[in-house]
Image (cartoon, rainbow, N blue to C red):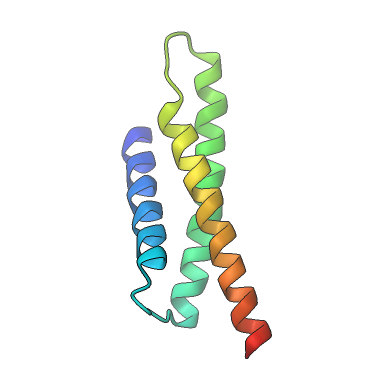
Length: 90
């Protein structure tokens, strides 16, 4: 279950960054913005918890948790930056 959640978070974060960087000019509604913000925060929390759990186990590799954590931080940072610019510019 952990691996499935981490892989799903990795796919969603990668797709979000890809869509934003390719610039499909997609404007998300308020409901989508709230959902993305909550999802990015939850994926950061889950990746952190799984990363700390993997430190206790011998022989486990935390690479998936680290990649999800870094992509989630990047996605959340870009999401907040775009929404801040949208709020400032009107």
